[in-house]
Length: 113
Image (cartoon, rainbow, N blue to C red; front, side, top):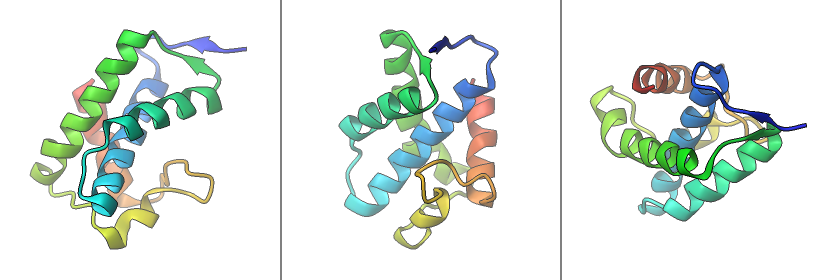
């Protein structure tokens, strides 16, 4: 059964961090900010986590993820390069919480919410 997001849920920060990592990794691989990729990955994350989020909140979360990836990562000293992309995710394409880069991204995402 799908559960609805609430403002205080930890899942919101996890989704945002996942989308930031996806956007940054995608940019490192393609040199393009792929909005369609963020949208697709948001949908997949919600399905995988049996969670639903109102469409407008999905748009806002995706926009915030792109903003953080484009502007805030560099300011925070987080540089996602081609060589570091694989360290961001597990084999199942979930966030690698053992990665210090992911931990720093998560802090940014918590602060942004």
